[in-house]
Image (cartoon, rainbow, N blue to C red; front, side):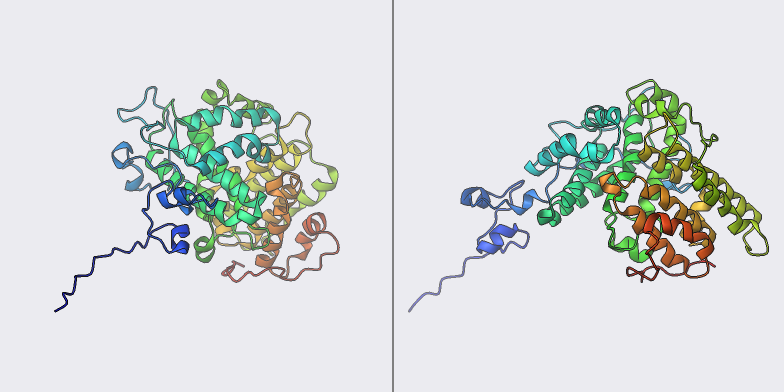
Length: 435
């Protein structure tokens, strides 16, 4: 009588690498690259290398902040991420911010490729003046080796840049960018309440670089989601609208509290150009611009045509003054770099104006339409190319008809006289605009 031998148990791997699955062999799931891929030597890179960025800090090495979880009564748009008041501690706290070390981190081949790209090419793509490029290529990288959240942000940005530079491998780099960004934001939130004299530079760089990441991630062929976030937009976007708004606007809080400290160190190259251009100073505008920009306030100054409360109209007036300042900075001699000038506007508008934009109040949207002219004038920067047109088209779609008196000029400057209107892109996510 034949003895039926018991079947040997088989544990099927459901998380093996893509290469082993295609070969129909069992993956040992070793990282950063499985043993089978190394043995085959087929030249096909193990898929684990795509999604295995630097190892996260062990849980016992991360000092999680309880302050941020307790919530804040501040109405600042940065209150969810940044503390409502920033004070520098003279010495590190008892539990210092963890630093990058060989014992807690390892680099994949992809990570090294990303860091190399950032230092060799990436920096010159998002910084438009030489001293700033040198700062971000050297000092910022040195900071990143001390502060993991900054290193992950750098690698996320480099991967995003490469997804545009190498379209045949766009999905590969985009996946790496998403993984690094997720880790960067988590580590940043875990440590942001403990701002000290040792880490405030890293915090400042992290929040300001979010402007670059947000605008680089915006697809010029899709509706602009940077100013017009919605639940639908945030679920589909790599970088949610609300997150970049809070982080970037929060950088102004850090800057105001640490200006003196920053101006004494290597970051003075970023601040020195602003010394002669304090926030209340508006450089002279080009007369051709001034006649249009200055008249924009008429869109909300008349109580007969605008039913906004007086306080909201005053906030719009202040935001318009800050926008005129950007126009003036773009042509002023010895002014900060054009890109820095354009970046500055969104960090200077009030919380109320930001809330009006979120509600799609028409008069606030007109400010964005005129801001598009400034964005368009820095389109020589690769990651800003086409973004002025994209933002203006989205703004016009949200505004709808009836505002042609005010939109004619930005349309002529940014889109050209041949533009005849019409919805040029899908705007299904845009709804609930305030009248």
